[in-house]
Length: 336
Ligand SMILES: NC(=O)c1ccc[n+]([C@@H]2O[C@H](COP(=O)([O-])OP(=O)(O)OC[C@H]3O[C@@H](n4cnc5c(N)ncnc54)[C@H](O)[C@@H]3O)[C@@H](O)[C@H]2O)c1
Image (cartoon, rainbow, N blue to C red; front, side, top):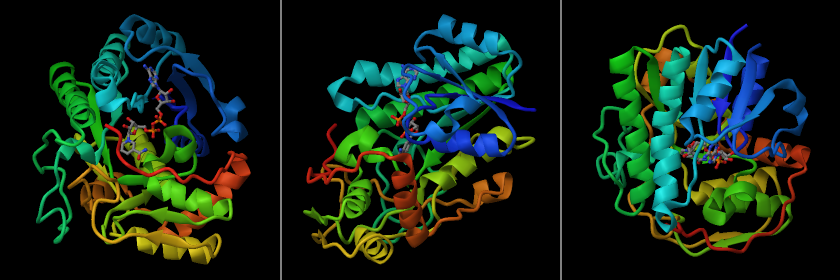
């Protein structure tokens, strides 16, 4: 049986990855700074939870050594404080990646999968951004996004460290660059920055949503269970063919498309999104259609959820989890 560690596994993405790994017959443990299983109560007794800070290489090494032979690690840990606390963001998101790589090297873990982001591409301009939206390939140059400098630079740092450790020490490394993820728990954990979660969760609570602008913005919105499937493949596949993979949905949608899917699958509430681009106010040129051909051929990645299926599964899972749903009127501006 393969043994997989999920670092930062108790957040939004981790629980879906853990369920997927358990379903694949894998032994799972998590390393996190908190012990909150509210997004995975159904499987909480089926994996081991360890506490360590991703910035503490000795603590991380001790936990890995204690767990015994490990086949692969997923590093999902993030402190999304952005510009309000660059030291924290850089040390967890960027240097935390080096710490995980170093602890893996010291304990002989052969593979590390790093949760990166499309933010590592920096500003996504035409032909890959609006209005052409040609599929954005992994070999597009990486750069710092001026509206999201700390987050994008720290993801780039984490990726560069992984490539260096792979070259120098021979461990397998891949950065997974996600499109815009939609998934239950995001609003509860991250607040109103995810307008998609606000729209869906408001509808579950029986109320509508008003968004000032951005109704014409097309974007690649991927369901969290598809992301989890892609991550699980990267952890479990026999051999990685590349060091970076995009994970997306394979299609472009607008918030108005999302509103239609919500009205059809959850509740016929009023959702009024104003016109224009950039639904995340203050974050320009961050929207793209991810080219997934590499993940498809190397990892067998195939998103299973279209927008209506994602919306209806989101509502079903939210209710099953018993996550408190409260109508949220806050704007989805990007705070950093
Ligand atoms: N959710 C998205 O839309 C999205 C999109 C692109 C990329 N990502 C990336 O995917 C990864 C996971 O995202 P998420 O939404 O699950 O994040 P999350 O914030 O919900 O979860 C992150 C987890 O990391 C843990 N953590 C924070 N600081 C830590 C530390 N010092 N040591 C150990 N653990 C620590 C937190 O307790 C939390 O459980 C992140 O790296 C994020 O940047 C997410």
